Length: 82
Image (cartoon, rainbow, N blue to C red; front, side, top):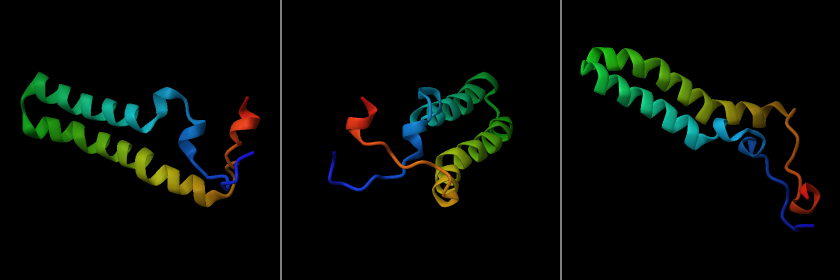
């Protein structure tokens, strides 16, 4: 067993498609695609606003809310994972 205390990290419990890198790449890719497709700043802005809110929620707010809820299990040590 490890001597370090267990840490609360929501990303250890999420699938690969819901990791910070995949959320960021998806959001930025969709915003970039809207620019390449339409080349209109106002339309790209309309795409970027909800995607920015989505990314902000899942990358910034969601992990804090999970940590504050007290309902999330603590990390399992390396030995117990198998």
